[in-house]
Image 1 (spheres, rainbow, N blue to C red):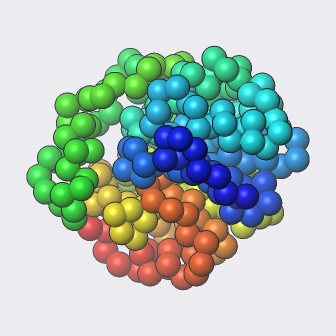
Image 2 (image 1 turned 135 degrees about the vertical axis):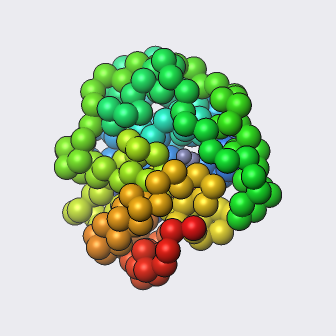
Length: 245
Ligand SMILES: [Zn+2]
Ligand SMILES: [Zn+2]
């Protein structure tokens, strides 16, 4: 199933019950809607403030917003939080994040800035500058439940995957061999071990990449760019074998 909406958003079913929601904004940001045949779980919320694409995707599955029971955030960066407040209102879903990110999501603290010097690609400079300035701001939304390493979230397992940010989470659906790597890996503007300027802690990030590669995933969703559905495990192994830039 693939559909293209009026806002250049795309919804693609990567495998049964795994839907990739992509957006041109926010650095080709992606979110993932997981349907295990019962309740719906969403990982990240895209950039758009009205959550239109996510709500369209839910309705496109023949479901209603209140079927969304869980919204999990990989971390507290703006591109991933845009739709959160609107989705919480529309669905009443429980909002989950790691303890370190929760007060950023709630609007009590700014995300840690990164260097604004050119690194990797000039196309990333607006995002470096945005984090440095703390602009644009997302609509704050309280986190209902904290997630730690190994916690279950519907069919997903939360994995603490720090480096890009201290409370960064990845999620693994073992039964479907599906990993959402968040911003630990990106495929836009190129396949890379996260956007270089954003890797706050290289040692932690390197350990995260090795741990994610060891899962041997068949499909890897990433925070920015298209999901990896061909040779995903091999590609992660290569990223994990190199020094973190
Ligand atoms: Zn990020
Ligand atoms: Zn991001």
